[in-house]
Length: 433
Image (tube, rainbow, N blue to C red):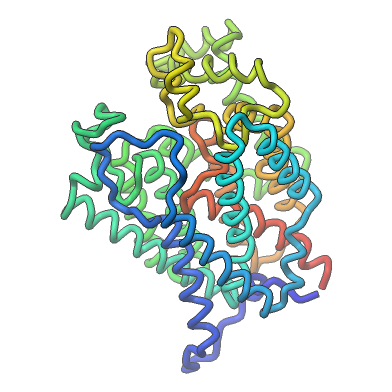
């Protein structure tokens, strides 16, 4: 079995020209991440009302499908046996369950389209790991991509603020006026991406250049402040502290329990505060806004509907934004039925693919990456990469308690998949050499 190329940390010989294969690998890698972060519609105006339950963006569908086909062709030519390392039983069962939830969806065609797109993204997230030739190459490519996205976001803010900063004329959330969003559709998406770039900057500082890494981290941190994304801003130091602690804890059981305890605590004192009086009293005492900026209305609305279809949910990605919800489930809520998601990924999963589906996805994306982190060999050469992937997974798990992190369509979701698969690769590739 061939080793994963990222496990190799050797540097190319000085003076060696970039060969054609390295050039192709670099272009493919950069194009994939830039496409996911920019999409085919960067710097979109938010003045118009969003479409409800549309047929999907054909340009996105064609573009990402083309990327998938090209990347799959490349992977099949270059040691396709490495792709088998991705197929862990939990992932297979999770995808089979999601397939069942497509069949039982109240909007089967919509669920089928979105699930197909998710399969494409999951495939890209795994195969993109095979493109870099070594750790240094991976570091250089991530630095280049991060700098390009950061430059575009800053240029957008200063040259086209009406398209890069939330405006009072925004149709959905005019109250966000003044918050930076860069090339992204929402300040929270921008905030999560900036946190990721901070992690990448720290990784580049260890692998490539302290100055370059510090520049990336500084630019991302500054932009994060101006997004006013409270969740991202709060979870960044938490992920950094927890990852540092977990990296030093020798006992896998203690490290995993510690990381998961934070997830459970966040959910108990956020969603749980709706029903548990002790949790609500503590939230009222600590936070200036015990509604979590209106999220409690959405959580209550979502929980009520999870109770009605707890096993398979309403269908894969087929609840929020549908005509049945927007126009038929208003009830006494002022805005919950018009929300774009549940503002809690675990609750969102239970709503769309049922409680069993939420458990499977949480096992795949939250628990098993922690297990893989401890199972992978403790080697100095791969320690920065492991730490990068761990930070991404921890941040995603914690941000998911307040935002829609899983099964998205942006670059953060792709990199979360890459981090999850990367920790898996680092574990099993050593065992199968």
